[in-house]
Length: 171
Length: 171
Length: 171
Image 1: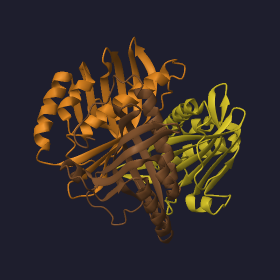
Image 2 (image 1 turned 30 degrees about the vertical axis):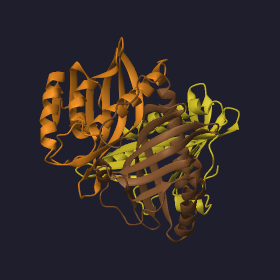
Image 3 (image 1 turned 180 degrees about the vertical axis):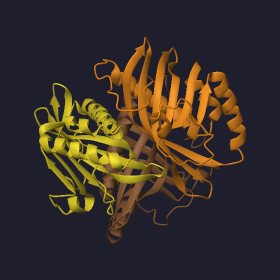
């Protein structure tokens, strides 16, 4: 999946709008789960063999394959989710995602396509102000399943170069 | 209306997408009225018996029924709108809403349904910088009328725990 | 094109939703080109006789016709794009647009209509934090062409009253 430069969206893809609306609804659910602290439901948005990666735009631009977080497979996602669910109890904060500019790019296989969306993640510490915690773009590969869309791959590429060391919670 | 925890969207609801798009258009109009300072038009987005409440996420999580602002009925909304229209003349500022992540949740009665959306409200004081004034979520109950959607209930739950004392303008 | 006060959206326009979704897709492509630094592709979103203007809300409210930037015609857009492409090499930064609250307002001629959308533009300097660079609204006039929508006019009206002097990059 191409993480740098402009890739034209598949305007010719007849179903592009339908898929775009479906991706928007997927992301609204995905973010609602995270923003409500239901991190143990988070792996259910992915396929069994899914890849989840969080990396800086600087790393992505240089083509560096590894980033801040790299998870391979739903089992690892579940392990991580359980670990985070335990950790978060000690550091209460509110998350709020805003996802916009959703684009469907290319059909990559039957029932599989790539998409992008811009996001900001706001964080509010209890008794503290709301801050822009992370801003960036989702680079996604979706597959259609009997239960709607699932992520085959989500690469979270963030613009922010200096990042709080506590980025453990999923984006 | 449930203000805490994750509530799954009604993916089974056949018309969910249609309603989601209608809610997005409703919120775009609602915010355009507020961002253009036409606060006296604001009550027209509500039913006669509507409830409008603004509260912190902390309060909502603790189940506290009252918040910063609680308005019961269109008459009270109109009284408040008139009062604000007079006040605002003395404190010129620009408002800008960004609303995303719209979700239609459940049909609660014939022609009535619940929905949520994330928002940020930016404020710019004349001669000052643009700041993130409020971030949070709309928890809404809509009814369909002959003139499109109307709010039966809007609960504005904001994440920000420390808030400027001047939150008088509708969100 | 009216840049001040609330203008009601054309709820009667049968195709308003279709156009709104098309405008969202247009803006997603437009912003992706800019956010990926492909500024030389930027003029291709405009008609030959297009107007592109960037001005403050304060100026727009006072009815001042000229703003910070005023470009008349695709040839001038292309000249500017080439100039920027050369300049930007010396000041690397990441741009990220979030566009929401898209509204289709009025059909102004056959195949031509007005629309608005709210945006924020985040900027990240290399080795620096992500900041809210610009917040405001697009006031647009679109025409339908054989290749989809094109901008006949884009007026970028920003709320921020104090602005960095380096606003050369397109918004």
